[in-house]
Image (cartoon, rainbow, N blue to C red; front, side):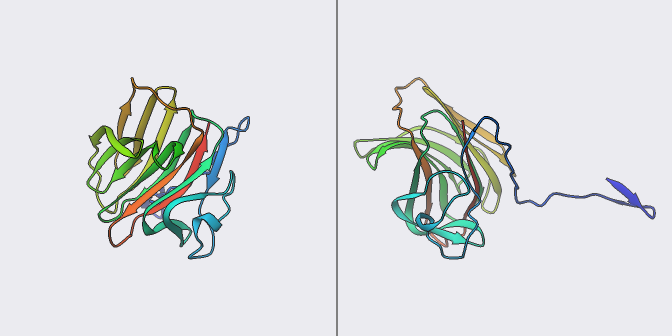
Length: 205
């Protein structure tokens, strides 16, 4: 806040989040701002830190230095070398869609995933032998067009999925056997018109 010529002014940060994590002891495992040429497929894009993205299903690509889905049920993974870690990403909530994290990925039929759905709720699922089981859900109250910073913390048998930004909320789940797979990633699923965007991905230990 300041005063110039008797008028009060205030400098506001842009709504879009800007992250410049400080690396201490190699704590950043992967980082991706999705900066690149428009229409570059994510599997052909090189993150700032961490291994290349592996496409497991669908298709997502760079658009205006953000990530958008272009084919339904997009799933991308990286081997981050740890089962216990923290994943974060910015999510501009799209129309009739959901986005979030894949984690502890064994294969297409055995893994976990969590979503921020356009209906304003969080979901945590376990997929075993090809069947999905809803483990937890919570109404957070955000809406289409809101900007969220999604965060997933994995620690042993405990997981916490949360958001800050235009809205804040937390969903936790524990007291169940977990696998210890070290592959994690992103999932995007849009029905139409695929207007949601992901940005500023970060994986830390």
